[in-house]
Length: 214
Image 1: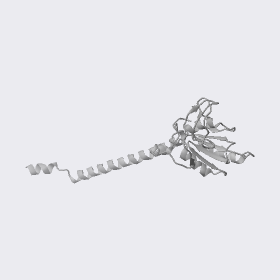
Image 2: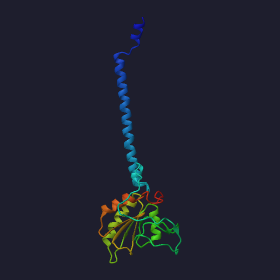
Image 3: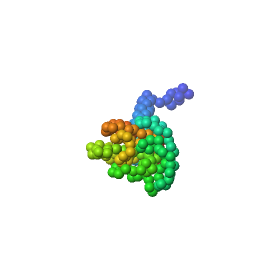
Image 4: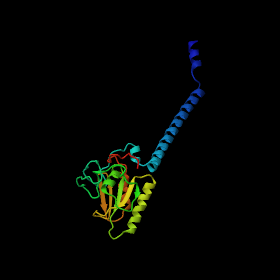
């Protein structure tokens, strides 16, 4: 009698096949859910990187290591706030890449294109906030270069990027890119070179206040 009772409690072949189908269905449903969530996260990260200033795409995936390049790295000279007219030591690069700078409301300058030179003490406050500054020096004029640089900067700022462009008469080269403690100088417009510098250094953890909104 006990043997017949145990036999009655065993699932039938039909029930076994149904249970297997149910497990396979749950497994496929979980995999679809997981894959959809992963794709959604990547898409959200990409959208945020385009439209939210100070939130680089690499940081969303844990890649928060401060970059060592591109450009030449200079020793940091601190981030002390000073008042106009206050004396300070010379900067260790031209244009300056770190050091003494004005506090609000004198700085930082508004993002985007400026047609007149800005003082290092202003520009450095922008760099402190994770900006990339784009400078040009054309004593005899360079309308085409200005147009090319403007297009690059407008495109980046239109996506929420923290970029500033202004003439810089005292530098040795025609073009210079600055980020906090980094400088890249060259003579001929190179969009790929500029994009590489911007993507590496804009909102970089190197900057003391990189997460401050533009």
